[in-house]
Length: 276
Image 1: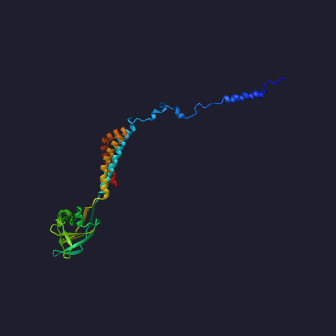
Image 2: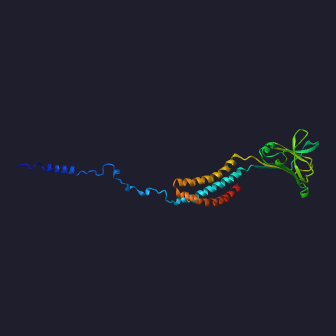
């Protein structure tokens, strides 16, 4: 009995091996995938048109930026006015004239009063063009006929003065009413004011007021409001240069909105500053 080309299991192994080798999957997509891409495969929605009108940018330029700029300008203007609040005032009631001094060979009663005011001398006030005013009032009997006063301000009588026997300089005051026929003088030494008079009755009130130099904060705050319109115009130019046409058109329309917003901001902030 002859052997028929080998055993049956050997033939099965050959068939499986041949099938395995011939049926192995081959990679068709091997290599760089990007080499198969074409310009048509790019998402055209990702390319933005710089000339496309954007409502969001337009509304920001038309409403939001003008409102913010107007509010900021209103706040700075009101803040600068408070920063320039360099006016001072102080007064004393029923001062005691318990001192004495001799002026032009006449004895005068004097009252030395400390005021909560700047310590500038009259020379400094005059050299810096500041304002200074002081007044004396008498209303003992409560009737208009008995009412009178005396006053002095830096603009009128700085170079008119007298000298007492002790060598001190005194400035004469202008009097009216019930004090018109009496003499009043004063001198300033820092925050202390000394008054001299030959009026024998009680003086009811003496006051001092004036102003100081502008502060650095006031100068800075006064300059900033001029920068806001310049910055606004610069933003309009920048928006068109950078092809943000929607924002630029909105900013141009905001020029009409800004004055109304400024008025409402001033009214609103004025109430807040008054309460403060």
